[in-house]
Length: 79
Image (tube, rainbow, N blue to C red; front, side):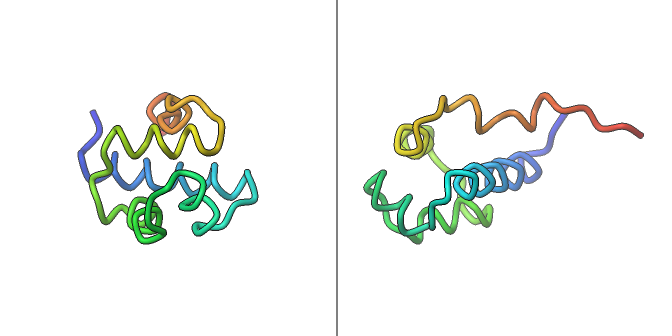
């Protein structure tokens, strides 16, 4: 199981990772998906429980499937 806090942190990290792979600044991404830059920043810092609607806007703006944000759920940790 994954805690809510861990999920939100991992999701934010994934959004940042993909944004950086696309060579986009937070402002560039915000402009592409028509949301405030502060929203992108707060999602990446896990300061907000992002809505599905916003995640879809972000995914569409960077031309990925929204499911790509959740790959962290499928990685296994070795103990």
